[in-house]
Amino acid sequence: MKKIFALIALAAAVFTACEPNDPEVNYDNLKIKLTSESVMNFDLDGGEGTITYDFEDVGDATRSKKRFPTPEAATAVEWISDITVHPTDLAVTFNVAANAGDSREATIKVWSGDYSFMVMVKQAGTTSYDQSFEATHVGGTYYGKVQSRGHDYFVILSNMQPESLGSVPYGACEYRFDIYSEHGAAFESPRRVPVGVYTLDHQRTGEPGTIDAYMDCSYMYDNREMDNSVAYKTGTLTVTEDSIIADIVLLNGESHHVEYHGDCIMEDYTEPTFADISPVSQYTSDIEFNVTGGELMPIYRGNWYDSESDVWFVHMIEQRNGFSGVYLLFDFLVPRANGGFENKEGFVGEYTLLDPKAESWDYTFPAGRLRDDSMQLHAWYAECISGQLDMSLAAPFTAGTIKIEKDGDDFVLTADGRDDNGNAIKGTFRGKANTYENQAND
Image (tube, rainbow, N blue to C red; front, top):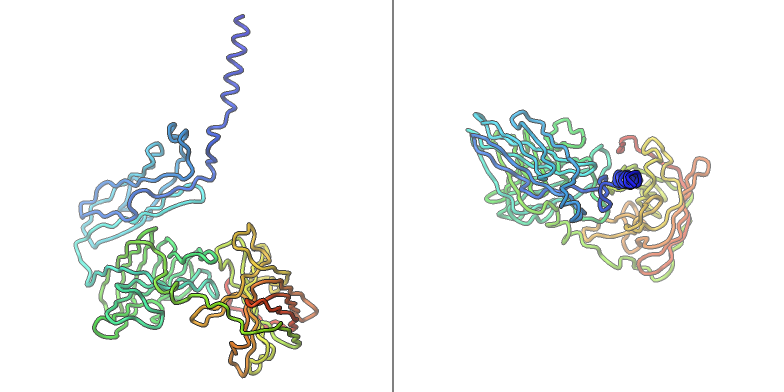
């Protein structure tokens, strides 16, 4: 009998040992998120700080057992020390040293697997800024990735709602930053300013983590009493999930400190100004074209939409001399394994209309759009006369298929689509490619 009980106990022990840690949770895919303030302020004496966090999709059983992954945390500065993770308390503690110099700020990054967040630590100093500015609005636009390694965001911090890139309302003061990030904006998503630290770059490399130092790109525009703009001499922009902090020195020598707290989405004027116009096509019958001897101008844009696919922007004109005749343009999404810029024929393939909710975007093209600033996007048929686009002869592709083949030295595009009025757009375009050498290259 004792032997039977021993076998039962052994079987129970083996069964317990083989059970998974917690069937409710896949520890490899838990998303970590910040639950305390993203900006923490310290006085001259410094002191201890505590960051709290949590994980999404954690069940009650896991919480009761306090069985969480242990994240990592780090900073790049020496005056923040003793960073310690407390996994059972879902907290990170750290110490800030006393400060006898200028005010300073730095970030602490906390990450678990592929997910992370940043907290800005600010400490008072013995000196003050010439100007301190509290921004109430974020404007700007997203340019994507054309001739740089970073994704280009033009960010405007203002005390009034920005009007446009080209104008500033009277009474407004705006600080403008042309920044480059490792990450692009997801297709058709709100344009959120990417979390990170950006430093003014006078070499204008376009590398991620930099601010373009050209005077027409990053500058202060003051329209409160007079129309006045001053470029930056030095500068740092720090972006967290809910704040943007800038410390800059203007070319005239003034030091400025800028803060914005709130939702870091650039939608002050990009949304209302860049609304879609629909319908666009003025055609009342089907469109047919047959071009030979044209020219294609393919531009590799890399991971333009922050997806698993790369983008080739391909536009083509029937007569390059004088820029006239049939004009076509497309954003083609291709597998990242195609080789990027090194594969000069990486846009060859058969494409269907993109469904943004699809698991894969490979070999698709987004439907054509027209913004009310006259910007044509994604997929278009048009005609040009003496270098001018005739919008009465333009129509977006909103359905159908596109095929591009290589035939000797020529590329041949075959279109079978429809415009936004339901008219067929069918035809072929044959021509040679004129490639660019200064394109984005991942």
